[in-house]
Image 1 (cartoon, rainbow, N blue to C red):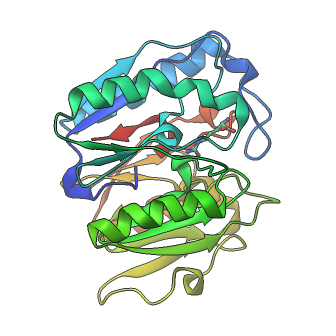
Image 2: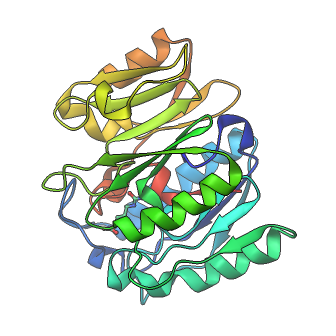
Length: 270
Ligand code: CIR
């Protein structure tokens, strides 16, 4: 996921697909998963790809009361030894958080855990990191108060935060429409975001704009060895990554896409 640099991905937390997955929220890419067995097979292939990339993977049990529970990215934001536990922007997703918070606070001895209070709301899917610059999506799930909580944490850590207005009529999160497959590339899609939206980037960094119909393919996870997890079916994205010397690892995300979930949504790197 994009909340850590490519050199900070050693351990990953995931959550199993619940039997109730067909009831997951779906308003953008999909209209709801229809085949739970296939969703589990696709999720298992994703886990295997992470193992093949050398990661230590932990999979928490599914929570059938929460159909969206596989989308752990939204529940915790790990930044340089700190864990921000946001209040998720959709009420049905708030109670997914305790087992994730519990796991991370037990694993990350010495990590500082920060909460979110009052009216502040945020989904982790609105955070994108490019090296030392953070981008946050102002979306239907993440509000100004949530952004101020993140800003306080980042200013304490010496990082810059830039706000991106999400076109909420057609996109859920910032990571639904962009990702950082390396620490100097932002992938996004025409008709969703433009290079100007990200502001001036450090030397050597660039925004690569993919065709509008490949927006789902713009959500990727890159690793230090040059492998990049990419959803299958987005030829321009795949070719562009190859031209940059990267190695796309293709995943069938069909049933997860039906629940508006992208590749980064299923992982928390810590
Ligand atoms: C939701 O609407 O909350 C889920 N169905 C999809 C969450 C996707 N998460 C993400 O983009 N980080």
